[in-house]
Length: 334
Image 1 (cartoon, rainbow, N blue to C red):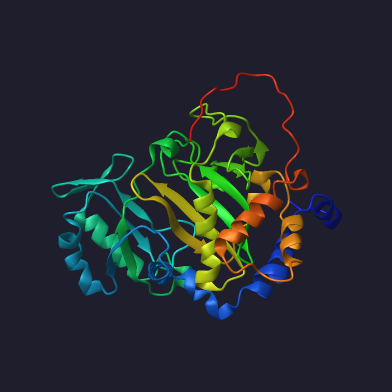
Image 2: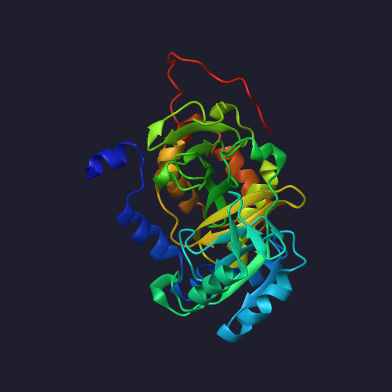
């Protein structure tokens, strides 16, 4: 859809060209891109900086190593296989449990060891990697859905995207899978995007297919009553990724594990702009505020406190939701 520049300015929306030139190119040094484009490098760096992330169990780097895969995962209750240089969730296979020679996905469907071996071979050949380059497969622990978060979504694990600019969290959204999105947290496929109040972690605006919604279509959950637990810690974790990578404009994707709490799932040096639709407000006023700061506060905890205080101002929030007819849910989580 073509939009006039005057419309973007009036609503404070950040367009693709301005994002690329004024923020990604200006604040992300290209030599740092591999730190986030390669999930294995991101994971090893996170371990070095003591940033919580799903535990790495195995790396398959060559075709001959695939024969060892079965023995190395036999004692794991569940695991995820990912291409290290994949994008958009392509090539990720999640195994929830295993029974004998069968491996079961969250949907309940079973696959064989031969199926997983072919999948690993495809990953190594670059079938899912950026630019089709040869890749490696990483096998990491399965994320155990936190009970509070499990209520939010139709299958799948909900995740939280936080945009971090110069080390300050500036906007966040919760992505919830639906039946229409086939259990995937992809907004383009019908998942719900819930904009989150940076100062509280509460839902303040929600969309599906870019249209404003009040309730989850499958669970009936009242989306604006969602309250994210451990919110300060999630913001702090995202803010620390700036110190870890040196990238000035990044998207941090987080999940909540039942046993370990907030975990860093992955980083993106070119985060999309749909987060503005989910929040019902544009990114530009927030980015311009942070850009004018004379210096970046050294500690992540101070940057988080600053962002929580500044962006609670009504100037940065969406317009209140107009009353509409129809039932609403009274469910509450968190």
